[in-house]
Length: 135
Image 1 (cartoon, one colour):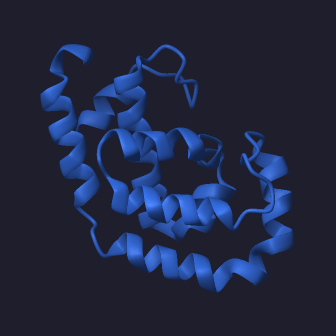
Image 2: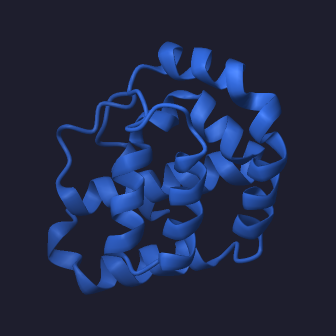
Image 3: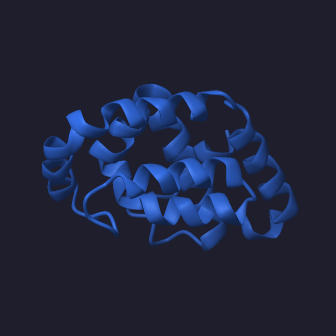
């Protein structure tokens, strides 16, 4: 519900009109939705992957080190760091490495799935503690 209200303010994935607090919520919402739906390969294959580094920062900011460690390890498997913002560039790189890292990514998916509600709870607490930053 919190993320839905913030999404109403943006056009597509242009998050420039949001403040840092709102962006952090959306970065985590995107990560959670994509990974729970199709794993880290889906997260990085789709346009959501352009926010991987910002999401890593948001996870750390909200004290979600369990998930930031996972995402950091996923990013390290990528052949180009920082990850390309351009979706097509990222997809081409993924096509070349997918078979070599698929099993490792699946393991990271499984680790992510072990704590499915932690991100949502952290978002709720983050908003509560910073309520003045949300309109």
